[in-house]
Image (cartoon, rainbow, N blue to C red; front, top):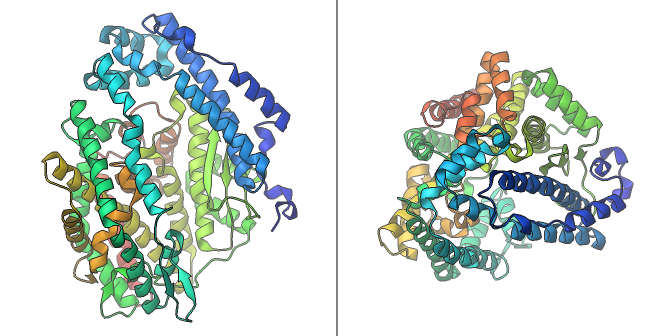
Length: 590
């Protein structure tokens, strides 16, 4: 469908960013004239430092707004050449800003500790106190000027392993072709693979699984060398900066206590028997004698979609999120009424869904809404992101408004859990109930257990490298297969191909990233449960968290909402939810 054929009330309103392309051009021209050269070498003077930081905020806000507008303009119609021009120009401004301000952090880390402490205590620097505190934490790991220059020169080299994998996994990947049950040829691309794994035709799933992993096996020597190089790079940087381990260095980058990682692995290990019972239950529901890895994603319940019109879906989302209070529901309605959302698919529109925001304007959401249950949950999910950004931007100064990735999925998942609980509570259809319970079970399996399995694998790989143990295809596959068997138990046949699964995970080239998906879900389950049980006090604490942005380390910010990831309570709570949901799933229709 052409965009012009869709009612304009379903478009997002870009005029809230700029009234016209001419207004964008004017703002672009002003941003182009900015320079920070006058501050170079002068940050040891408090007045100069404060002026520099304020100017950096001012310019960043302008460029952020330019970029968000260009990005959204492009995404609503990627086929329009002029839209691509906007985004290319906005990106060039970002690159120029980053280059022009690259001196700031090295200069800050070279400053005397007493000077930095004095700035932190100065009320004029209140917008920047947390940022300066992180600079102080990093100081023991900052080397001399010459050494820092040498390490900085390696930037392109450090990212090269990810680039090589990306090219191997996309441009050079030998995507196989298999025949479906009707004899038609199906090219198993990365996107099509997940579709194949949900097919009701088991023989077709098996063919697609073996062919897809066969393609990775054909490239395993190259991928092994690439991943081994990436891990060795992490080991080198950790040693060079004086960290005890690669994990310590990675978590320090987001100011996260290492106890969080350890608690996650411990809780998951203790809960593996529940996961094994779930897999056994899924095997029985699918009426299989033996579960294989290519059976893991087959829906237990099909054709249970809600099939709601968009307005009906929005009304259901508001009902489901009513426990968050009138202000939250009013914000949802404001977003629906004032065109924060681009709703329907059109020719040339970017696929998928996302939330985006800039500091001075309300957030925006891109959807490609279809009448499915998944798309109803997508509305709740993306609005969770948006309202988190809305409260953070409204409450925090620009320097503290942006929250870290560690907490980025919490608000979106809280919304999903609350909506699911609401629909379950009013559902009378047994099939819908079983579908929703299986939806939550799969969310926990794939986000909490599976991502922790990935996290445990990369932890083991880095430990091996730090001890000088070669990372070979044999050692990596052996380790992954052992983990897969431990996680999925005897109910599943860990097909030999699954030992190569590590070779297809792009997140491994951003080390120690995947665990954040798991901790985000743990936090969201805990918060949603607390809101439903305690009501107003829990909601008030949650709003304080949503309003905290990036004003402190993310673990401390979650404590505002009642979640302490340095302890085991929230992790154990998530496992109880999994067990209780499994019991409810088994009881429906029993």
